[in-house]
Amino acid sequence: MSKIKIFDTTLRDGEQSPGASLDNKEKLQIARQLSTLNIDVMEAGFPITSEGDFKSVSAIAKEIKDVTVCALARAVDKDIDCAAKALKSAKSPRIHVFLATSEIHRKFKLIKVKEEIIRTAVKGVKRARKYVDDVEFSPEDASRTEPDFLVDVVEAVITAGATTVNIPDTVGYAVPEHYAAIIKNLRDNVKNINDAVISVHCHNDLGLAVANSLAAVKAGATQVECTINGIGERAGNASLEEIVMALKTRKDFFKHTTGIKTKEIMATSKIVSGLTGLRVQRNKAIVGENAFAHESGVHQDGVLKESTTYEIIKPEEVGLPKTNIVLGKLSGRHAFKKRVKALGYELPDEEFEHTFSQFKLLADKKKEIYDQDIEALIRDEKSEVPHIYELESLSINCGPVPTAGISLRVGKGKDKIIADSAKGDGSIDAIFKTIDLLTGIKGTLLDYSVRSVTSGKDALGEASVDVEVEDNTYKGRAVSTDTIEASAKAYLNAINKVAIKHRRKKST
Image 1 (cartoon, one colour):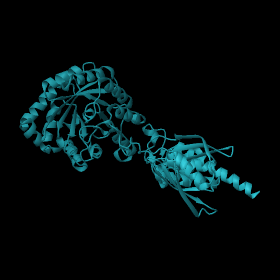
Image 2 (tube, rainbow, N blue to C red; image 1 turned 90 degrees about the vertical axis):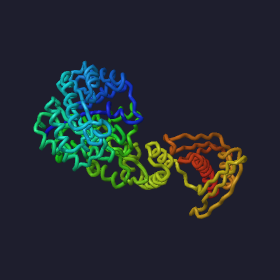
Image 3 (spheres, helix red, strand yellow; image 1 turned 90 degrees about the horizontal axis):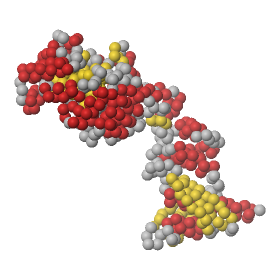
Image 4 (cartoon, rainbow, N blue to C red; image 1 turned 120 degrees about the vertical axis):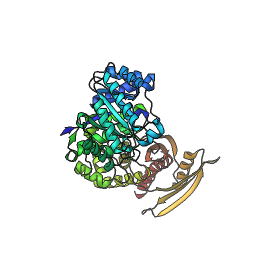
């Protein structure tokens, strides 16, 4: 299989993302990781734009020796001279010269005719070749440039010494069939096309950057320009991780490979996201939080039996330790039982079914269930006592004098409902006094505590109480996403123990 070169422009085009800004130290940190990822070319920056960019390109050129280090320049003498100076210490330097070629850019931005464009492009390439042997030229807005004129420009710059010609879809205007046709037209009509590498650089304004890049590869391009996490101007660039994993996963179709160490993809994504402050969307392909996560019970069952049923990429391939089975309201018994077992619990069938039903109730309130949530449910199940009283409803009035209104289910079939209300010094005190009133059992609270079992706004809260009744201490505990409800259930749990003890005395 032939190799596709991966040209990473995270440090240049990626940093142009609104909201992203990197200092020299951060750029060097990313550059080191890109080197570890084993990219072929690293576009380190645009030296003429600022002193900071010049210094960062210089620092990267001085340290990074196993990757071609590239600097961007307009087809202007001072830009090219500045880029060459910044790359002075590079072991494998490349100067990337660009000039707009489309009619709309010629007419409104450059105010130049076609002949002037070709002369300026050729002059820029020749100047860059005086400094380095590796020169890339980009006809900016190539996808909107007249096909015949694009052929003329590309042929002229290769003759002038360009070793790579990059065909940018600068504004994300192309669609796959159209973009592939552009590459094919160049291959068929540029006489010296075999003297240069054909590169592609796609933007994502229509969400087609990766699709366009892959279509170009099928049409004969041998270098793809992309960024980590797809960051870049406006809607971003083609995503490196998506390009690389598409080529790897569908090598049967593309018949190409890359030199990327794919196990470094996730680490690289996290470093770039952390330093730029640009978060990766949850459902982003390859590196998104949900990319290897399964919540649907059907999917979970399939993946647990055979991962390839619902995963075309092994998570280990991109640097993740394993598939993430997310327990939520759509999860089934298979996934829940496997997680319970992994936590070290063996539950009898009846106990498991009750715990599973409690899990489903919790999942309706809470988007994601954590291991600590499950352990709390299991502890709650194992400490469960027969209920004489069950909480039916609870309301709190937090006015000047807090009042709790409570309904309890009682009786053998829990078909009778009793209700009442009481005031207290606070909401919790009012709840406990109302339960005393309804059950006829007066308890003295010795200890009360609430803790968060997990983190987040929807965290599961665990309430614990020590209640003294008739010189005996009874412990009660309960869990709920509502700490007020957990408190009521914990107190009721302790009162149920008292009620059961009273019932046993009567029966004897």
